[in-house]
Length: 299
Image 1 (cartoon, helix red, strand yellow):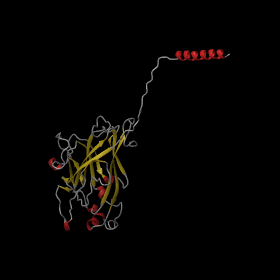
Image 2 (cartoon, rainbow, N blue to C red; image 1 turned 45 degrees about the vertical axis):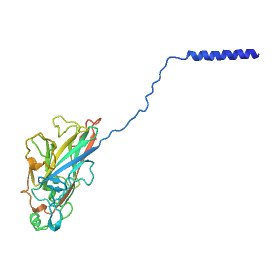
Image 3 (cartoon, one colour; image 1 turned 90 degrees about the vertical axis):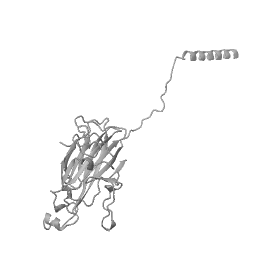
Image 4 (tube, helix red, strand yellow; image 1 turned 180 degrees about the vertical axis):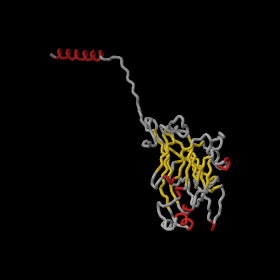
């Protein structure tokens, strides 16, 4: 009996070995390790160079030198130049408190989107338009009983400030081959209302109007922004092909601004009035978003 059990066990082992041998087919295993998905980024950054009545903002002063006013106060400080950065409340395209009819300012704004092509829109919002006090000339211009009741939202200044935008090449001058956007008084907006401008969307491209395309990621492009306290007239200058220039040594005084500002039509109704505005830019991914429009509901 013992010999029989040993024989059966031996047969089982041999059978197991034989079964294992019959299943050893050719094989190969390949493994891809560390597969990763990481979201890209749409990061818009802006820088600015500004001029007021042709004087560059240099070292914190218009024209580069301090002008000491009454009582030793400095009256011509400026802070509207900055390097490429994200915008915050400290970045103001203009902050002027004593403007007169005929005054004008020009900014050359550079826009840069990291890595990815994007659609690009600009947004302008009128946040206040106030009548702050009543001077005698203002009362005569507006009529007795009107000016005597100044207040929030009752100002006339927004009706007198006219803006002009164009696709600039970075030299702070409107030139003959540069596309302009329709100009108009900011007063066309009510307080709290916004104007949204297509810089580059599926139907519009101020840099390449004949063939609209997305704003190229990793590139820098420029827009010019001018305003006039009065009547603005385009006066573009011949293209010199120079492009971006040094704001300290070159500016509108070199060749002109490319537009003219006439303050003669402005009356006394806007004396002491003030306005505030928000100016913003928005970048939106263009990949898988081919039909994007900045103003999809416009006619």
